[in-house]
Amino acid sequence: MKFFIILSVVFAIINSAATLTPNEKLKGCCAQLKDADKECVEKFCDFSAISQANILNYLSTCTERGPTVGQMWDCASTRIDHTKCCEKKGVSGKCLEYCSAHDGVPPNYLDYLFCVESFNEIRECFVEHLEKNEPWSPIPKKKGKN
Image (cartoon, rainbow, N blue to C red; front, side, top):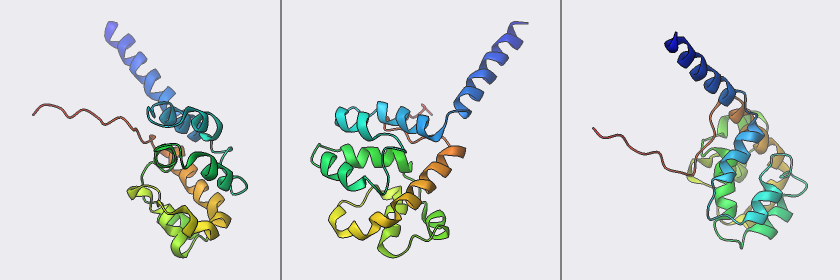
């Protein structure tokens, strides 16, 4: 009987993690960012808060606040290569560097101002990935002893 209770609890935990929305996963990741600017995290760590319309406001507000932009980008992108998704949505050229997020966010934002018009499509790829996958964690996983 105890086995079935434990098994039920384990399945409940797994199901609750699987039912998190992409935005909840993003916020959970951002909550773990110890070096990120708290004001930027509170204001912008939300897929609906960062869009084509306000990405420049986000960058101008948060770029000079330590590793905030890069860390939040890692949470949103999960550091996964989204190039194929972005290409399907019409993102092209140098803007694909934002989709190829496995190396982090490109640091020279001003060189990519023309990519603002593709930002919503890039964001959609991040959201679609998080709908089916676990979020990126800024806390390194402990390696088991072998």
